[in-house]
Structure formats: C-alpha cells, structure tokens
Image 1 (cartoon, rainbow, N blue to C red):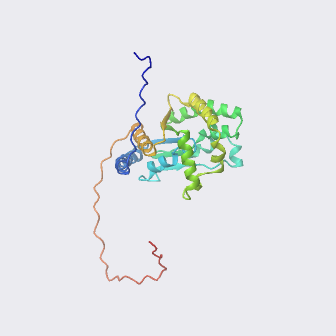
Image 2: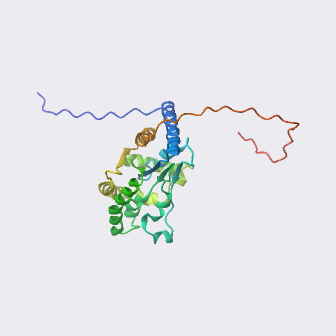
Image 3: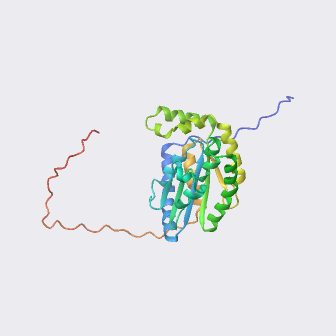
Length: 271
C-alpha cells in the first residue's frame, strides 16, 4: 500500500465571466440601485461607503460601476487630494467631516480617513504616535456616525501581488491609463509587506461590531464589481417605490415658426 497522502483538492476558481453575462447581471443590479436611490431620497437615509485597498486593487472600477446609472446628486464620490498646509494643522478627521452624507445622500469615499493607517503610515507622512492615535480614535468616531443613523460600509479590495504588477504595468503601457499611475504609486510598489502589516493592524483595531471591514479578493474585476454592489444592496434596507406612470405630452404647434439657417460653426465629422 502506498504511504503517500492524498492532496486536498484546490478550490475551483470560477470561470472567467463573459461580457454578455456581466452586462446582464450589472444591468439588473443597476435597476436595483435606482430603486435604492429613490428609497434613500424619500426616507432621508444617510449612507457612507469607503473603498480602500492597494494601488491597482480596482477601487475606481467598482465606483464607476456603482455610480454610472444613478444620480450624482444622490451618489456623491469624494476623492480628496493631499492635504494643504492649513489642513495639516487641523484635527485629522476635520477635512473629511464636511463630506459626510446628509439625509437623502449616498457618499462614496475613494480612499478615506484610512489614508493615515495605510499610505501615510507606510510612506512616513505621519509619526507612529499619530498612527496609533488614529487607530484608537477611528472606531469611536465611527460609532458616533452610526449612532447618528449613518449607514457606514467599509470595503477592502485585496489584490494579489502578481495581479497588481500586471495592472500597474498595463497603466504604464496604455496611454489612456498613465494618469492613474502617480509617483506615489511607484514608490509604494516595492513596500508590499509594509502595507500588509499596516492592513493587518488596521483590521485588528478598526473592524468593529458597528463598522466592520468587508474584504473581497479583487483579481477578477467583473465579479468583484457585481459582488460588492450586491452586498451594498443587502446592507442598505430599501423597498421598491411605486413607479409613477409617465406619459409624454403632445408637442406644441409651430404657430408659424420656420427653421432658421444655422450659421454657427459645425463640428467636423471624422468618424
């Protein structure tokens, strides 16, 4: 009898999702997001969604998929630049607070106050004492937010080392994407394990009962987008509002109006 042990079979990786299947699923989710949007407006809900992850994890693609069929007056995306000298002198959370949702709003942070636990910590833009003060204080502030009826959802997109390399190289080679690759991204690339340690510490100290971190492996962009949108829909209570029947009215009569010749310069048709 052979003494070799049987290997545990690997978990099957889902097949790559085709574009048609993805578009059908995304369309259905977009319809639900419209229903959620109307419920948020009518009921005055306050929703705050954070997206964090390494460079190239897919945050921008998720946010685009989440917001492309809803109103920007309800779904507001916040991506703050580096703090000014004045903002550096303020209480750390101060510049984020004005962007928190009011009634009837969904605010999405493309990176958030957790910059202090990640980029700022790893790249030396804050002291270890400032990092620890933030990690201690963030759950307290978030508890106050939740107590004030803000629905707070925190997502971490976990990209693998190989896939991050592939995506960042793609940004270098694709003229449409070079703007996505900042000097900070390049400087951060070599510090994979420093970021891993910072992430682990952040989860340990800030994933609370009232504001847990939700983690999704994001190597498969299409499934990541669909699953996050589906998860958001499951976490924000909503009902389908009664649809108003819309009938287009008849157009007015011309009453003698005749089309004038348009003399303004025209756009050249090249395609």
